[in-house]
Structure formats: structure tokens, C-alpha cells
Image (cartoon, rainbow, N blue to C red; front, side, top):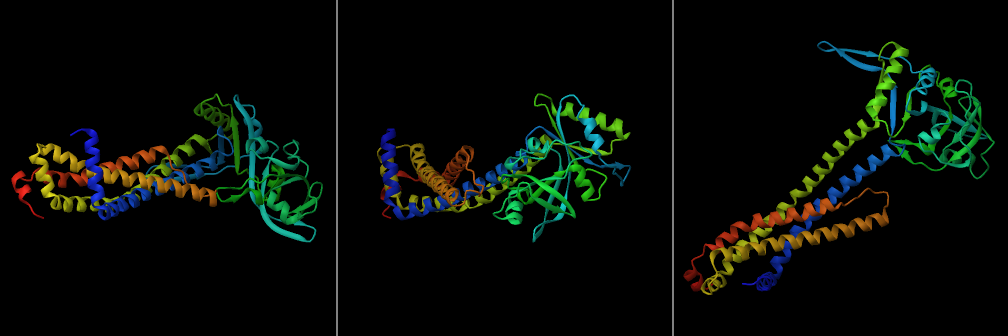
Length: 399
């Protein structure tokens, strides 16, 4: 039998039992759609979270005060010493360091005219505009004043500006923050949220004034931007040596963005695989459907099998024909499932653009390969049964 003859036989065999074939296809379609959709959701979530962590750049080392160390069995010592503005001065002299951003963060009461509300307050420097990639919509960012004695300027997030100043002008106006007056220097473009913090609901003031506002003598963080051509391990070691020389002990923690992204990526990939695995369970429905219909078909088509054997078909050829029928059912169901999932994801992107769904070619190929494998496994037993029928008994079978 030629390849074209095999295709004609296969198509006629599937069309002869339209209802059963349709139900089997439906089971495979639902299973593959579940796998693709859950995998797309997992991949979209992974891409979304990874983009959240990289929106402030990719060559940053974060330094936080304190270091947890373990001594002996069950002994834990937590050392906490302040990171100071002088530390940021020292780190600026490190070879390969491009920018150093001291950070202090908190919440304070904002007032303007008859309006008042609580909002996030970030104590930073003028370098935050480049380090955090903040874009100014009106006015300018914080001036590059002396670190320890800056002027009382403030830059507003877009939401704070709208809620406190409404349609009126904000630039040059005064804003009360925790009992002190600040002059509005600029308004930022909408930045959205980062790890649960609404950056549009935040005001930005000089870091020295932030320390005074929150009555702190320690920075919450130092963000160091380094040259792109430097290995992260090398720049981390340079930073560590400078701070140890200043503090006499390693009482700080270095967090490189590569480490954070690598850990997150591993976790999120496991989440994606787990989601796809849950969807794969539904493929059992399709597998059972293929097994059932092929077993029934083998019994009903005993006479046809006998005729094929009488025409000279070998047991191996009979087995391959029935196995191809099972694989075709699974593969067509998989293709329909992928197509429906793609259409659904396209519709979701049109209606809810922010919803993270991402169907990758790898997932599509994996889903189709899985459907083919399931069809082959489910069709093995019926195909062997068809091939093992006695030709003479099969010809006598009346159904």
C-alpha cells in the first residue's frame, strides 16, 4: 500500500465513525488546551516578574545593613551597623563604579492647601533618575545638591500630583511633608508598581532630609551601578573590601541582581512546569477516549481486517494502520487545541493587555509531541489486537 493509499484509508476510517472520532478529538483538544493555557500563564507570569526586577537596570549591586552569621550548633549572631552617607562617598571612588544611590524609604503625611493624605516618601539623590530610570513629565528632577546639606525640593509621583494638586499647577508650589515645607521641582511620568509598591503614589526628596524625616541614622540601602564590562564577582569584591576597611567587619549584605534573577528564574520555571503538569493530567481523558474507541473499532471492523489479510496485508501492516489511526486522532486533537489556545490568548491580549499570557514555540512543540506520544501509547494495544486476529476467522466474522 502506497503512502497516499494509506492516507485515504485513514481518512475514510476516521470519517466512518464521525461521532466517536469527534468525541475523541474533543478529549484531546481539551487536554492540550489545558496544557498550553496553563503553561502560557506560567511563562507570562515568569516574564512579568523578571521584567519587574530588571526595569531599574541590570548592573546593580544592592547593599543592605546587617549580616546574619551562624556560629556552632544552633548559634546565630545578627550584627547590624548603619550604612552612612560617608559610605556612599567612599564607594564612589571604587574603580568600575558608575553611580551610588543612597536610599531611605517610609510613609509620611502630605499636605497642600486643604488637602492631605499619606503617601510613600523616598529619600534619594539626583542620581536616582538614571539608576531607577525615572522619567520626568514636568519640570526637572532633584538638583545635584551637596549630599549632607540639600535644599528642600520634592519630585512628585503622577498619582500624588493628581490627588493633591488636581488640575491646578504643581511646579513651584509648596508641599508639606511631615511638618516641613518642600518646593515642587518636578512631576514624574507614570511608572506603575514594583513588588507591591506604587511608585506613582510616591514623592522623592533628598536622602539627608529623608533621614531627618524618619529620624534615622542609617540608610536602608545603597544601590551601586557598575560598568557593564566588569564581572559582578569582581565589583562585589571591590565593594566588600572598601566597606570592611571602613567598618572593620563585614556587617553588611551584598545582593547582586544576577543572584536574585537566577533564583527567581529557577522558582518561576518550576511554577510553569507544575502548571503544565496539572494541565497534562487532563490528557488522560483523551488517552482513555482513544483507547476505548480503538478497541471498539477493532471489534467492529474484524471483517475488514480479515479482508485486508486476504488481500495480502501482513500482521505488521495491519498493526501500523491501526496505530496510525490512533496517532492521527491524537495529533489532530492536539493541533485543534493549540489553535484554540492561540485564539484565546489573542482575545485575552485584546481585552486585558496587562494579563501575562505567553505561549512559546517550545510549549507548542512539546504539547504536540505529547499528544502524539499519548496517541501512540493508547493505540498500541488495539493495533496489536487487530494484527493478531486470525485471517480466516476474521473473514467469517459477521459483527
